[in-house]
Length: 79
Image 1 (cartoon, rainbow, N blue to C red):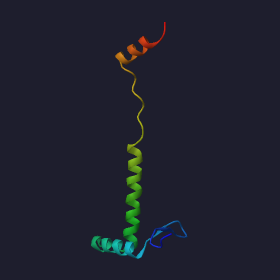
Image 2: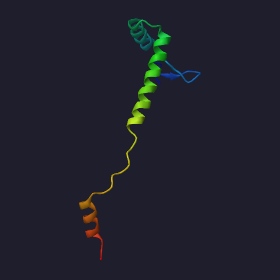
Image 3: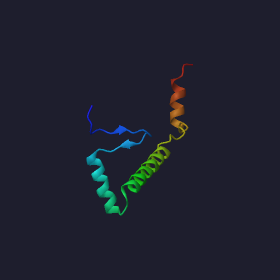
Image 4: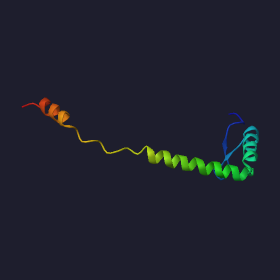
């Protein structure tokens, strides 16, 4: 499609366009890092955030129905 979109590299790493590379280089320079170190750190942070999000979204066990819920359920059953 468009040459500016992200494409998969030979090792599965995403290649950056010129504009994206320039933007990330500015951010790396501001942080006092090289571009490669910045991208590795960014990937590490993204994985940590994804793991944290997965940990947070684990479903909890359903609560036991309360007294009135059980009473209403029994009232709905036929005799």
